[in-house]
Length: 112
Length: 116
Image 1: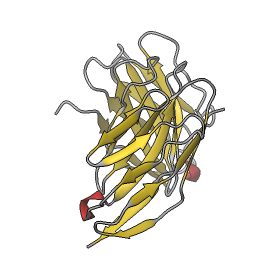
Image 2: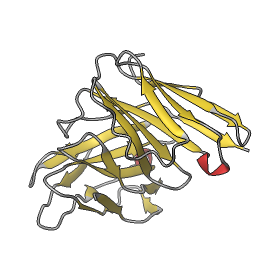
Image 3: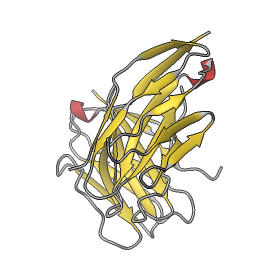
């Protein structure tokens, strides 16, 4: 079956540091890949997505590239802010079915 | 607002009681999903509905769990004879179309269930 493995947290960074959260997946076919974010006290929301190999999703300074050869979708940001503190979830959606598979989430804390 | 809404926001119940959790998806969204998020864990898929098709129930953990969607809109997740291990946040999401695979899911705020 499908699976998503995320870098374990929690991750603590200083403001303006570089962020990488690793995500690898196992899937049959060609899934779509997503990063969702859950800010404190808020619901899950889409951060970015990519639907095919070599696509790059980007939003709010975050980027992730769909790498089929390494089955990865690592999340990066060049300079994090305190407001980026949240839980980040990597997910894949099977193109032949509706359900998505989520990673366990990575908690990011950014200190001023 | 126009987002996904869930009720109640919190539910405390005694072991062995039945509970019903409600989800109102975004108007016009044909796909609806239920997930469970236990403390410190990721999202566990439970069930999804797509239009008038038979729901995918493959994620339901036991026959104590069931869900229905009336009129292609509101959905109710029912847990019978609740157990302490059912304590979790239950999330509902909706999207325009499920089978396209790339559709963004819009999540509700969740129902926090505590079984004593």
